[in-house]
Length: 214
Image 1 (cartoon, one colour):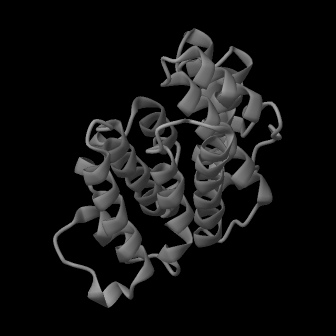
Image 2 (tube, rainbow, N blue to C red):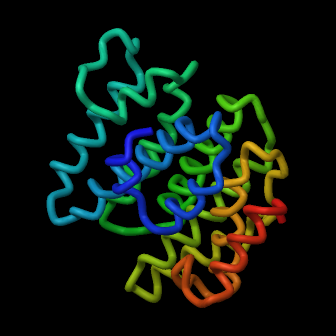
């Protein structure tokens, strides 16, 4: 495991990763680190063209043969073990949609669908395919997005989209980190889009789901 990639993760993702089984640790880290890398590009929203170039670079890499990948990037090194890294392309597209001038329902849905697809692909890579993996990814995506918005109108748009989705969690042990993020997302949405780890109850919820899966 590359600890530099772990350092790129936000606290909720690091907390979830801490509950990964040894055989699942690297694939989960790869998805969360790719997500964090894309998030960093979008956060630099004052340079949208540069962000688009960087995001396009990752789209090109995931869509080409691994033999063509440049050497030296620890994230690409983690992804070389994936059977189908192109399954993560929706995650790239979802983040790119947030670069639009207006955060409308289509952009929010696209972002949620991208993280949901990434979790579904991750479940497949771990040999634990479960349709509820995508549901956990969607809950996490929408809650995380709402918690990072300062515009109340945009937050309300995200919460309206969140109200239309399911809230069940994947039960497979290998998917426990995904269930943790999904549970934290579900809790944050109920609390109006507050940060995922706000309040003592969030840490207790993560611990409970990490131990029991629910």
